[in-house]
Amino acid sequence: MIQHDKIKINDIIFVNHRIGNKKGSYTKFETDYVFHYQLLYKLSGEAIITFDRKQVTEKADCLRFLPNPAHFRYAPLYTAEVIEQGESINIGFTSDSPLPNEITVKKYDNSLILKQLFQKLQKYWYYKPDGYYYKSMSVLYDIFAEISKAETNYLPSHIYSKIQPAIEYIDNNFTNQNIDCYHLANLCNISHTYMTKLFKKRFGITPVKYIMSKKLQYACELINTRHYNINEISEIAGFSNVYYFSRVFKNNIGCSPSEYIKNAHL
Image (cartoon, rainbow, N blue to C red; front, top):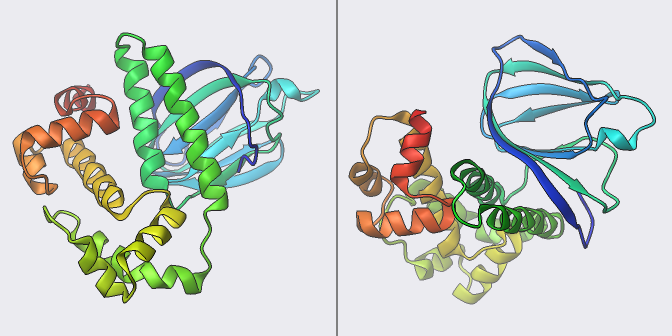
């Protein structure tokens, strides 16, 4: 998507949590006076995006990079056709780095981590705690670091198959409070050290952090249903107690569960 070893961010223009238009709607965006890049994480839904005659389809858990229209000698066409209504987190930023002049949509294997980083950045921008701008800038650089890592962290299918049993077991059992990583290694018939190495190569994180990211994603989904309180969410998502859940949630998402619930209700 963005293959650049050293990206310099000049300024963050905006960070918003956007709810898309209704199914079947068509929107044309004016690009005459737009002077920033955009990086968008698609939380849900589906849309067909056209930018400068190139058409892409974005779905849930996809990342979309939009070039800076000011770098064109004309106002490029920018439209969106909604196939299924959804939500997204969109970041506008400026940079002097030579970034691509072509729209790109891609889904990464580490999309869970990217999603959490986008949510964390959005919470900083929305609640504006002390030092929020510097924290936001730090998280944006973390996002680019994860993208860079994902661009290089490819495993051939025959290597990926070695950890596939562990991935499938985690996906089906991540709400268990304790998943033994040595048991996962035995399922894969490889050593714990080798399994951890492959996980870090593929996802950029250890198996333990991969499990935690699944728990947090599920917790956010439970919050958005508005059917559960914090104690219930902590238990359902597989955390040992609500205090540990609250601490881990705030460290990773950027706000407490109660703040997240308040924002979700708004």
